[in-house]
Image (cartoon, rainbow, N blue to C red; front, side):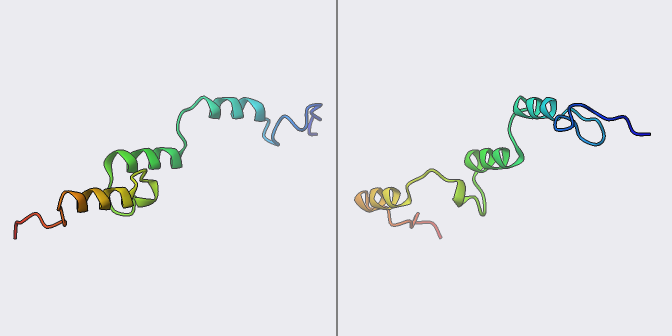
Length: 75
């Protein structure tokens, strides 16, 4: 027979201590999505615009001020 557990809300059916798992997860570092965002900000790349903290309009204005139209002069 299955032994009853007095702390039924604290343990899973397999006997795992839920609060212990939550504490360990909180101390484990970045989540998958946090790591993905960090890498996108540091390395750039295709499809990473949503993670950018660059103000695109500000960059456009600065480029116009300095006459940089995006053409490097190289063919």
